[in-house]
Image (cartoon, rainbow, N blue to C red; front, side, top):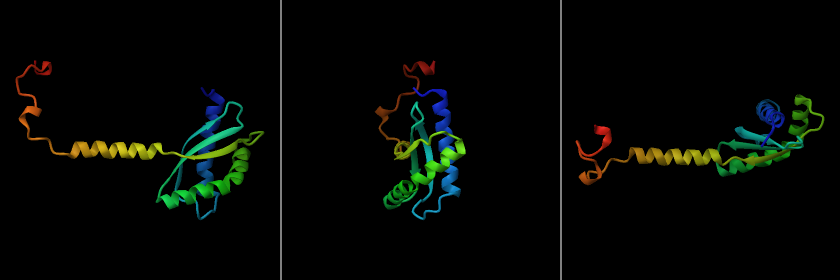
Amino acid sequence: MQGSRPARIADQIREELGDLVTRGVKDPGLGFVTFTYAKVSADLQVAHVYYTALGSDRDKQATARALERATPFLRRQVAGRLRLRRAPELIFHYDTNVERIERVEALLQQIHDEPRSADPAAEPEAGGDDPADR
């Protein structure tokens, strides 16, 4: 379980990285990136940062390479902005949870949009033994 300081630092790192990527990093390989979550170790030495990126698989790979290239710059900038004595090592992970959530939502929408079956045995009869009807 993270303490309150590592959790606060993680949120600040996520926010600063978002600001840096939109304003400070001039790498053409860096596409549209959203930092979804960050987790910092208890000793504040390592920060695992999760991100999503829009585009094709090729675009996502280009974004991963661009983040890898920009890591030393981002690490220095984050440490300076947060006034940390030692800059945490930044480890970037692609967040697949967003894609899974979108897939589940699409499946639920597909189920909802399917026409109801015309089988009378599948639908409860009006006035049956359903306690909700009482």
